[in-house]
Length: 316
Image: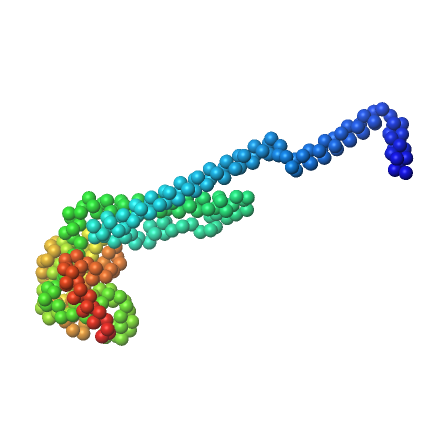
């Protein structure tokens, strides 16, 4: 039955005009060629596809190598930052960078920056690469700023060593106790919790108060809360304040040297007993003065001070 149909179809084709038969053969040939091409390309890559795949593989490999180089650079940068933070700066007695603007620039970008790459075939690889590169760039910027500052201070190390607050502001033999520490505390008069910006060194009224580093007097006056106050500008971002004084021996604009007597312990301003309120400020922010006392302190004196502070904390 099927054979008869084929013969009938063949006879019909043969009775067609010659031109139509040629066109039919061309169409059939094209269909066979297209089907063959699809069938072959499903299992065997064409030269063009093979080249594209080789190029993609090469790009992925190069991208991976780039990632490894970025990682190696980040490790080197971390080593530089470590030396800056834990070797150079401690040797010079300076703190790490706290400038909010620099820290903002140093922080990483938001995810929105990488949204255009999210739909790409290699999005994970591309986004990861861009993140690492941006992070490296920003860390490099941060490290360069930090090292520039360290270099500046190293160049002026001799001057810096004379101005940094590095001695006790009163004679330690006159010290009765560290009556209040740096940090949060209950105010002795008002009873509210607030940050104590310095340390209170209890001592007899009239005890001499010393400049803790070379400086220029920026304030020598009465200030609410502080009472009689002296503020010294040491340069390099450092200032010190001496509050509740009974006497002031210097005036604004005077130059003072480390160890010079600038006033006497008192009980002026908001104060419950005679003591010196002492602050160390760096770039506008207060820091714990105890860390600066350590610079001229023997190990035995340091242990004694820590025990005294611990006893004071327990009582409070």
